[in-house]
Length: 255
Image 1 (cartoon, rainbow, N blue to C red):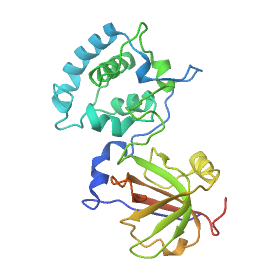
Image 2 (image 1 turned 30 degrees about the vertical axis):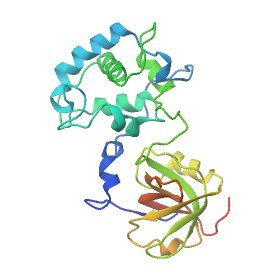
Image 3 (image 1 turned 60 degrees about the horizontal axis):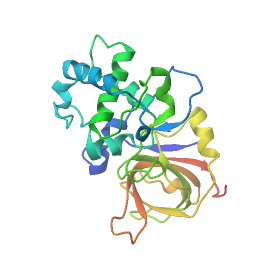
C-alpha cells in the first residue's frame, strides 16, 4: 500500500479555511446505543444553554468572541460552524473543545463542555427541547445545515475513491464515489483504510488541485483521495479537491 501526502502552508485558500478539522478527530470514549437525531430536533434544554453561556463567557469568550464570531480562535457560529461540523456528530465537537485552549494545564468537567455545546447550538439557531443533552448522547446527534445532513458543505475535508487519470497539471478522478466527510487529512490506515477499500466506485468526477508531489506512479490505479471540497458555484462543471493525500488502493481501477 502506497500513499502520497502533503503539508501545505500558504498554498490553497480552502485548506486554511478548514484548519479546524486537521488533527482533531478521535473516537469518543462514550459508548451506548442512542436514538439517532440531528441538532434540529431539540436535543438540549434552555436552562442548559444558560449554564453553557456562563461557562463560555468564563473560559471561551476571550478567544472566540462575545458573539462567537471568532478572534484568536475560530468562529463558532454561522457559515464557518456549518462548514466545519455539518455531517459530524457532537462528540467530535466535544473532543475538540477538550483540547482548548492549546497548551492549557487544566480542563473543564465533561458536563461543562456539554453545556457549552448547547449554548453554541442555541446561538446557531438550533431549537431547545424538553430534555438536557448528556455526554452519552453526543455520539448520536448529528450537526445539520440548512441543506440537510446529506449535503457536504463547501470547503469541508472529504474522502473519495476513484480512478486516477489525466496528467499534470490536470489530474482527475473518474468513476469516483460521492464525497464523504473525512476526519483526518492523512492517508487512511487501520479500520479507516479497510472502510476505504470497501467503498464502491461511482459516477462522479473530480478535478485535483495542488497535487504535489506528482501522483503519476498511481496513474490508472484505484485510489483514495482526501482534500477540501471546492464546488463549481456555476453548477456547470465537476467539483474539485484541494488535495491533502492520495493513496493507491489497487494498481488497476476496479471495485
